[in-house]
Picture (cartoon, protein in one colour):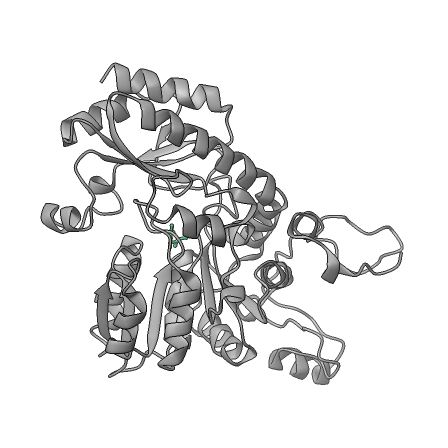
Length: 408
Ligand SMILES: *Cc1c(COP(=O)(O)O)cnc(C)c1O
C-alpha cells in the first residue's frame, strides 16, 4: 500500500486514521490499531544500537526506545497526532494535565526572580500550583483579569517573562482574545502559554494565533469517556521540546502506554463528540435563558454574551463549546444543592468533557478554596451552576434540567 500523504487531510480524517502509521508490516498482516507496548525495556541488535537508543534516536534520526519512562511507542504515536492536530512543531504527553502544565511552566523558563502574569480565573489547581510550588521557588506570580480590553496594556506594564491564560474560563466561559494576548506577550519577550482543554483543536488551534505552548488536560474532551487521566504540551518551536522531554523524563511524568492507547481511541471520535456537545450546549443555553427559575446564562454562543462576536471570529464551525454556566434566580447554596439533588440524568461529577452531561457547583468544587467574597469578585455567585453537556439526546437533557428546576 502506498504511504498516504497525511498533510492534506482535515482534522476529522487525521484523527480517525491516527493509529495506523507507526507499526511494522508483518507477514501475518498489519493491525489497524496500534498494539499496546506493555514493556518497560527494549532490546537492541547489539550494544552500539542500544547506545543509540539510550540517546533517543538512531543515526537515521528515527525514534528508538530503551526504557519506557524516556518514551514509548504508544505515547510517541499520540504525540505525533497531537502535534499535527495543533499545527505545532512537536508534542510531549504527560501522566495528567497538571504534570503537563508544570512541565510547560518550567520549560518556559520560570526560575527564581522571574515573573508570570496569569489570568485570574484559571483552573483552580493551576493557581494552587503557581502559589504552592512556583512562588516558594522565588517566582513572582501576578494574577489579573486578562479578558478585558486592557489586557495588552497590563502585559506591557507588568513586563512578565511568561504569560499564562486559558482559552475559555471556568466556570463563566469567558473567551480570551488569543491574538491580542500572544502579540502583547511577544512584544515584551514573554513566552506565551495557553490551556486549551475546553476548546480542543476542533474549535481553535492557538499556535495559529501566535502562542508558544499549548497545554491540555487530555482527561477531558480528548479522552472523552471518563476512563483515563492524561496531559499534553504542544510547542510551536523545536527549541522548547527537548526541555519538555527532559522534564517528562526527570520528573517521571511520562504517559503510560495504556493511557496513551485510551486517549488515541478517544481522539478518533473527538470531532463527532464536539459537534454534538456544542450543538446540544447551544440548545440547552437557549432553553435555560427562557426558564423562569434562571437568572442568567453564561455561554459565548448566545448573542448577549460579551464575547459573542470574538467567539464567532475565533472558534470554528459556528460552534461555541460544550460548557456553560447559569445562575439560579434564588442565589443560595441551598437552592443550588436542591437543584443538583433533583437531577436524574446529569451526573454530579467533578470533571467535564465526557460523553455524559455533568453538573458541578463551583463553590464546593473548582472554587472551594476561595472565600465567598473572592468568588463574588470573580462574578461567581452562590446560585452559579456549571454544566458540561454530553452527547445524549438533547431533549432528555433539557427535560431533566426542566424537572429539576421546576421541583426545586
Ligand atoms: C482538568 C483540568 C486541568 C488538570 O488536568 P488533570 O488531567 O486533571 O491533571 C487543567 N486545566 C483545565 C482547564 C482542566 O479542566
